[in-house]
Length: 315
Image (cartoon, rainbow, N blue to C red; front, side, top):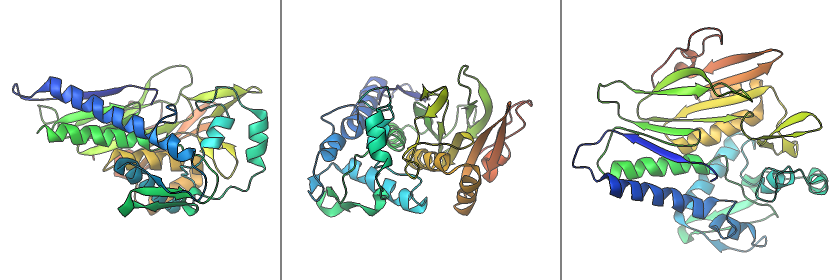
């Protein structure tokens, strides 16, 4: 997935840490082998190569992620869309290259692209799927969160309850530290140049994921273009949101909803988060400043002015 995973945990002396290390690596590798767009032989790329109308057998984990991705696509009105692989590649964010392809962009802009949740059919009992439109799946907005959930599942299968596991900006926390305090997580400031904390939150038996415009971007014509795609625009998002963090019971949910809110923009994102009672932090770019909008009790308590000291909240 072009990134690194980590696990921090408190374990009794008898815990088999070498075996756990191997199991965690295998879990992440399994997700990568199924869902990567950077591996031509992944199960996802095998499905992308299939013609519309053709049933393709898929692993259980991949079908699980596809099902939840389609559901969040419906609930977000198409803001979260797992079928935008052609846009990702055309704009230079995929495995095809890091430079926008003018001809490919022109082609995708001319298409009337349906929301993927309306043209992808899953047959879960028979472990297969088929598409009813020519599109390429890209699970960058949900697969890492699922991988984090799989890591936490592995940790708990070893009988360990106090752990913090992560992959890139997606994290899941279970239990607490030995002194009984929750896991403290830094929410990164959306800065193009420097890495610093915007504030902190505290997690116990929950997950957090962040989407932003400040880590994966390209510059075209003097304008920074985010890697997050907006199906309705046929290209990178163009709104005031610099970053979105979402806290949820599991990391797959947090990952996907953070992406959806990022696409929607401040007003619609806030309305959707309040409708579904999310804990979310929206960070807007304004001339010369950033503005935080905290939604839900976690972030309402953890969104001081940027000039103030970071505060914390507990889920």
